[in-house]
Image (cartoon, rainbow over all chains, first blue to last red; front, side):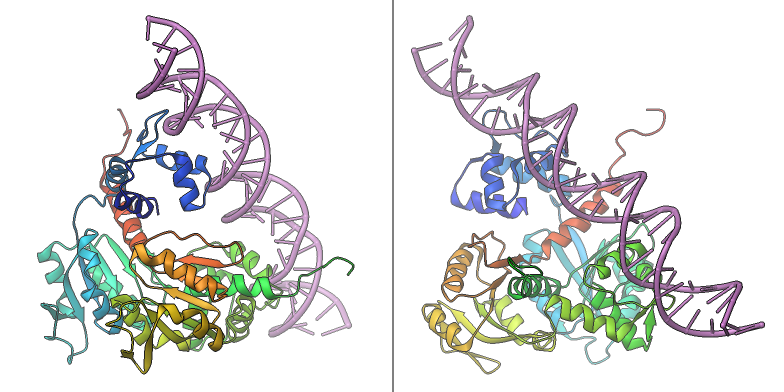
Amino acid sequence: MYVQVLESFKREGTPVVSSELLARTCNVNPSQIRKDLAYFGEFGVRGVGYHVQDLISAIKRSLGVDRMWKCALVGVGNLGKALLRHREFKYRGFDIVAAFDCDPFKIGEEVIGLEVVCTRRLKETARDLGIEIGLITTPPDRAQRAANFLVEAEIKGIINFAPARITLPADVHVEYVDFFHHLYAVSFSITLDQRPKAKAIGD
Amino acid sequence: MYVQVLESFKREGTPVVSSELLARTCNVNPSQIRKDLAYFGEFGVRGVGYHVQDLISAIKRSLGVDRMWKCALVGVGNLGKALLRHREFKYRGFDIVAAFDCDPFKIGEEVIGLEVVCTRRLKETARDLGIEIGLITTPPDRAQRAANFLVEAEIKGIINFAPARITLPADVHVEYVDFFHHLYAVSFSITLDQRPKAKAIGD
DNA sequence: CGCCTCTTGTTAAAAGTTTCACATAATTAG
DNA sequence: CTAATTATGTGAAACTTTTAACAAGAGGCG
């Protein structure tokens, strides 16, 4: 979140920000920001604040996103294709260098210059290319199988876009992405507002 | 998350689950699950567990996703179009009934039978259609403007897919969606694993 | 050069969340 | 019908996170 907000400040040409300004923008407490940043090092200057560009670099270095990560995508359906076509990935440091699917009709197909390869060849291909992160975009019932293939290929992390939990060895990191969770959250907030209060005055 | 996991159990034909089984699947503590569910009501049966279908319904009712929500999308770029074409929205209870953009070249264009309307006509159109939730898929520097239009139209909640923070009146709920946060999280975990430990034995 | 102002980094207190442990209730078997 | 078994719902303890308060350091001005 901080990177996102700091990039906005950078675009606007603001060279320095205080924890207070950052806090107002992110809707959090200034102490929170100072704590979070201090966890990684002393990035600020007392009496002055944080240099926007320096802070962006420092956070990116701390998170390990100051380099390019090689990624593979498994499951070339609607969502998979949309992600493959999304330029932002490379720009943000995640290069999708291979795409896999088990559907014979899809194998051989090209999506923005990337050939869809059979999932059975994932292990060798991913190793040859030195892939470190896998993106799962299969239907939910195929997610675990995709995950197993990725683990075999000695991938180090997985982003699972399929709406299903997967089990993995402890040393493989996973993040679940499902924006319907956010839609549910908004639905819940609105619903709470509109529901009659449990105990109103004079009740 | 629970809905997601329970739907998987339902597909597999499992009629009843215990908090322990749910916990193993979600990688959390069984007490956590019982606490979370107990917050909304007594959905389980002592000595038996939770009825999968009943629990899904109960959670959905609690979250307010047991009905259809009318949504409007602002910003018909790559991401916007992808979302408009995504069938899952309607299936999950979120019906996108209007699409807006300020680009004259896009206005009038049709995306799966939905006409792109000028953002300036958002207020009247959204009110006429009874829209409650807005989806922002503009570039980051347009997100606030889109949000302002949505607030004018008396929308109750916003999902912001643009990588920018927005400020809103307190009674409008907002959720930020940016899956790069998840990519960053995985990058960080892998990086931590690989970085030399701060203080090793005999150091 | 020293004083004043400003804002960080950090310690301690407050608030919140997660886990444990067990009483309570439902079901099944004898 | 009673006892044994099982798994929920919940109050209290352990742990984590957030907030407040302040000492320490940087820059500017007289």
